[in-house]
Length: 108
Image (cartoon, rainbow, N blue to C red; front, side, top):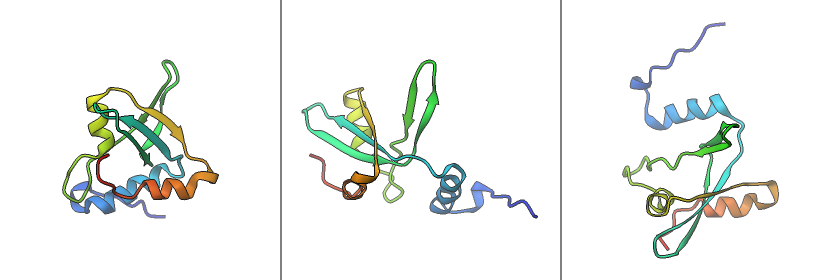
């Protein structure tokens, strides 16, 4: 069996993301809940989510920039304003709601 070598400099960002996601899947989806400086709440699903450490207990998620436009997401903007986030794990009964929450909405 041949080993596939992938040079990140020679593939598109979406293709590279697909390879990276396949390397760590399956994984849970996090619902990140944040609040902005005006008290407006935001709930957003993140598949870039994992355990980082047990001692101290640390969960990480990555509110990466959008591929289209390189803009930041509301979750990251909120965390930069109020340095607090609540991580919830998506379970099967809320899959449809999680999918709806992944749609792009205006801030607020």
